[in-house]
Length: 276
Ligand SMILES: C[S@@+](CC[C@H](N)C(=O)[O-])C[C@H]1O[C@@H](n2cnc3c(N)ncnc32)[C@H](O)[C@@H]1O
Image (cartoon, rainbow, N blue to C red; front, side, top):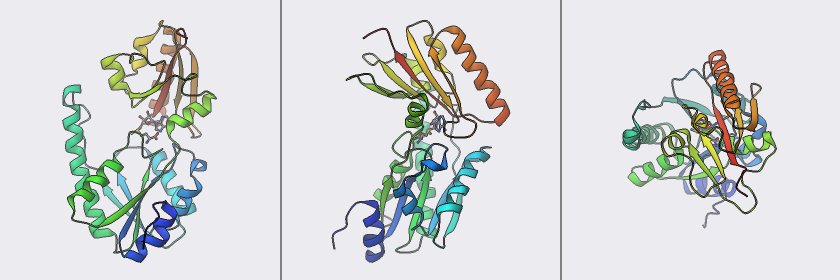
């Protein structure tokens, strides 16, 4: 038979009939359980084994969201298998960043391979729950492709897109990500801080910014839309022309929130407002 690549058809008709293991990579949104799509709920309800990676971090809220989602939507008898995420060298200097990530991905692929081989029965459905959208700064898809390429396990996989922190940021500030007919670039705090603002782009979305790189760009005609814990009850939003006073306010609010909760996830949009 031919297999329709849509997740619903692939799950219901293809994998179980062919006796092939099927993996769902499910985007669960950026913190609000209401962000789950109907497709995601459907896949959650067809999953036999959920694979959770324990990152050893003190982010109880993130774990709580996953547990809530499973309580509500994992309606079929299922198992939850937790594996320890390999340690990653986060202190690596920029030059060593790519090799450090490559090494971590390889070790993570070993873990995924073992989970799929040992924990998922033939023709079973497994799922990885991915924060936000799996297409954005997440390694799950690349790692599954690597495991599949090793050829030791036969499995299919499909992706259920989720609402990303970037979509949530734009929605909560009630702005678009790009200006009319103009590009938008998504990058990391590390890159922004090392390389400066990209040329030819008016809108830059910055993720994974432990360095608060925005502080380098005050007084340059930029507007910032900043958000932390987006979609959660602790959400914080700040926006305005990026001058030293606003940069300092974001730094202070960020530090206080981080001290209070023990962790922070923030994202922001830098918009050039003086060019066009
Ligand atoms: C490893 S990336 C994962 C991104 C995720 N796949 C997504 O679609 O949003 C983690 C970064 O996403 C951003 N992020 C994720 N969730 C967030 C949230 N609820 N509020 C603010 N930023 C968030 C932060 O920049 C964080 O450093």
